[in-house]
Image (cartoon, rainbow, N blue to C red):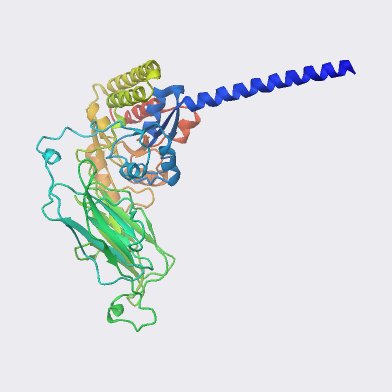
Length: 512
């Protein structure tokens, strides 16, 4: 019995020691994880650059995944919660990630360090005259809101314009709604202009506008405007109802791009299961202008070259008797020429070195103990970027044909850095077959510049590319704009450097 007791005691002691060791090991592991810097990045290039600098000293997440548009991304509540717990947020620039402004208003993290890695790199230095307004004292006054109707119906759009007398320099606005005067004001996301379009639901509500200064301080706000919803339930129809044609069924819009450039062909297709005899398309410059019917556009496909300004488009499907049976609603066509604000600076290996240094300095500021590691990591990655720059230079040195044709003008930084000429075909939607007239225009371009290849961004549907190639006698090839990383590169554990090296090989098909 004594032997059994001694054996049991020894086993208990060993088990206890093992448990203590496991517990200690687990505690040390958790402590190490807690000691890591928490970094949230906006989209792929920022994730790559931050990862290269931080190494194993940080936990790094990326908000905008593959398939999402980093220009027009909308952060989720989970994204906001993640940023609220982070030490560092890294994004490219306000010109690229428009949505970061509203994100920063929502985040409640006083200790968060924010780095705009490319800000100041994206654009040429503005003249002092262009920046004079930053030093002016803005005299605030009363905001007036125009455009409110006496009442609305459910489904109507409220079209309002805010203004302040004497204000000529500031145009940064925010709009808010609330259900009644006892409710809290709620921000309307992604509305920063003086003009607002807002969908009316079933209940009355209030709207107000605020004008912000250069340092994002509230200068003044409007009085609330009451939006009255009157659907005339139980009443006889008013005269104005006779002027409104009822629509039925659903319509889907295909081919709409996030934005276009001047000279791009806007190609929109309305898809519906309802039998349509003829389509009628109308355009207008803005909500205050009158609609103008495009008499030559009578099919489900609308096609028009983009000018210097955006416009609004609306398609109406008619039956055999000329009655409206379906309506696309107002479609906003955005024209952004990136004049002095091309956001794709991460495609220039020389400028990326500056962005890497910005991230390095921010990490040293929030984690001084890691300075030696961050400095070494940044230097190593910058050495690879210098070698990449050298590869570009050697690849195109002495080339006589220095023009390349792309679907979308995202490669201006490469063209400028290495003395190349980028020509954007534009309007080659990956969803809509190009019209014969559009193919003819591209054919002329191919002939004029002796174009052997038309480039498409990685991730685009290749079926339309093949149509263009067969009709114009060209080949197609992929260029990585690196707004996301292709699945092929990810599966092979390759990244930014390798994708850019693939761009060199693709460009060699044209640059000879």
